[in-house]
Length: 125
Image (cartoon, rainbow, N blue to C red; front, side):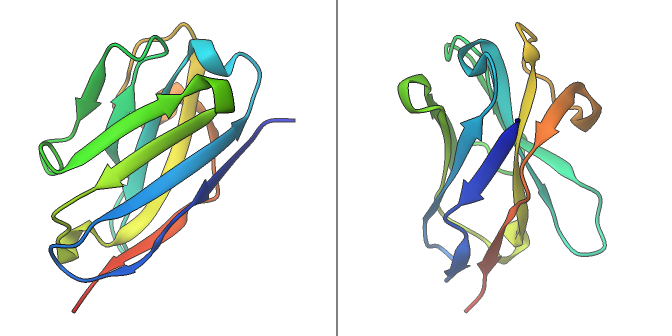
């Protein structure tokens, strides 16, 4: 059974930091590129960050580049997103997603075939 479970969301002040994690119960995790997406109220889901299955490549949206860091720990089937210098516009539900085995990092949601339920991140004073 495929399952991605995100944890670590919450309320943080502008300028603060937060780490969200994704526990993946999915076959062939170590050969899947993984991504984080987010969706704010009234907006479409957007790509945030991706990491290759080999962990040697990462990719970020322009809106988070330099502030967010994606990483993975294959021994634990975990993916992390560390978010620094958070802004109110980062407020959204954050989703973890997995691509098919051996696929390159993609920014397109329709190229991910497994999704978590999401975790809420709210940036507010």
